[in-house]
Image (cartoon, rainbow, N blue to C red; front, side):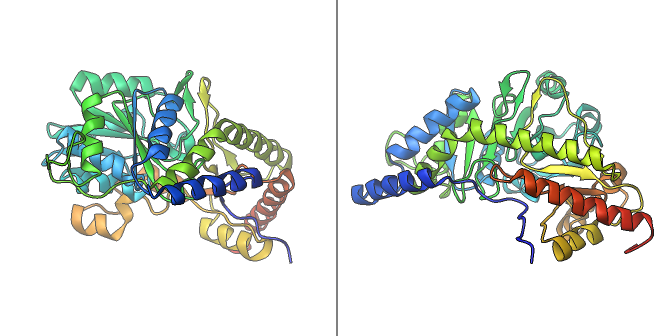
Length: 382
């Protein structure tokens, strides 16, 4: 039986495991399990990495998005969000008291560019969420930023996929008014669970630090506002510090693997459509999406890769937000609302991608995909 190829997995070298055990022992002996020196250092080094003045550690990747939208006062207003994103991006608007207004996507980037965003901006719009899908910063990010500034709209980066990504030399996380990162286990940088808010807005950072601790003042124990517990524990922060030290190395590995995928798929000529590369962009390659030829059934391809080849493949994202039962029931969305997203995303498969993936595994994934697409072209499995 062939060994399985997971879609994603955290990359934790043995030397980091040994160092982490020492960190954990130090934390446990100290008795300071939360809001201690490891979190302070992680926040400081993360801010330096993404090029912002402030970073605030939180318990999930959703929390920074919600907190930024709460601070901006979107309650009763609208927040424009791509329909192609993990549901947390748009749910953050609901959690902050706003209404997510979804928009269609650019088929070349799988996220929303300025034309798609601008089409959904109205009198009630308070904020725009720019999602760096699969780790790519949108080619027209500067135009999106200028548009938002001209309209007085918060530009919030959902950088959950984009640790290590850059646009014209500027890191993801520093391109808007604020950004939210996720540290879920599959992400380019993980703490197991957790997230980070990055911003140059001192008042937003202070609000976030208060809100994550039940609304208590950062200066003392007085309750300033209603908040909740969104704290990131010390053990998680220690893990994050070790991962952050590896980020440049792991980003380079992902980019090398992406180049390997491109070369092998082109060599095999299997018909899978590669997404374009864009000048001035460093891609984080959280995912490696390919578009299947017309007529191929995505679900069948994914199932056969797993069954025959032991290869785990996935999507970014299917179904898109507007086709989820909750959004159809509560917000009135339905099939046909965003035709580009529905057509393109139904053809997109994401191939295994993580820093520890081998070139041999990439070759096997590509060969398996090529074999299945050849079968599909002959009508097998259709």
